Length: 208
Image 1: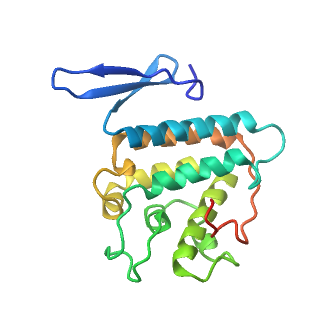
Image 2: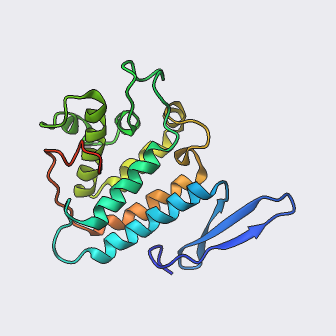
Image 3: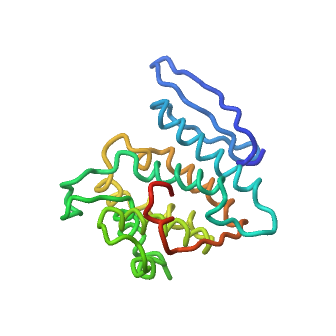
């Protein structure tokens, strides 16, 4: 069974009362996820579905910002990366603003031939510091997709557990074992060609 086919989740219980979700991942292989909260599970399921719809949408033409499937995917990914992100006053942000981009730029700084420096120099992103961080984070998602390296970036960031814990509060999806499932889902997107405009309101507006 492919990771992108419909999940049929089995719920198992232990005498201790802990509950586990079993997700089919590859043929005869299951990923076991400790059931912690409905909200986190809902986000993961929504993310998995958004990847599936992107794959179904893709034909021969590149997917761009006009794709509703992409907009939905980007919004959910941004939500996951922002889930329980440490707020203003954290050690790594002096101006009180925050964005998952601050985490990505540090955790992925050692990725070979990374796009971090070039993204920070993108023109026409809002001069507002808060909006600029949001816009740069969204630009990173788009560039990583066009490079077919989004899974690589996310996997690298998750492996840097020390940095991840500095940026996220306890209970964040990114800190849980379930987060490793994200990289597996993202691998399939390397089969898609993406084409995005990296200037203008699309990057620092309310919608991803």
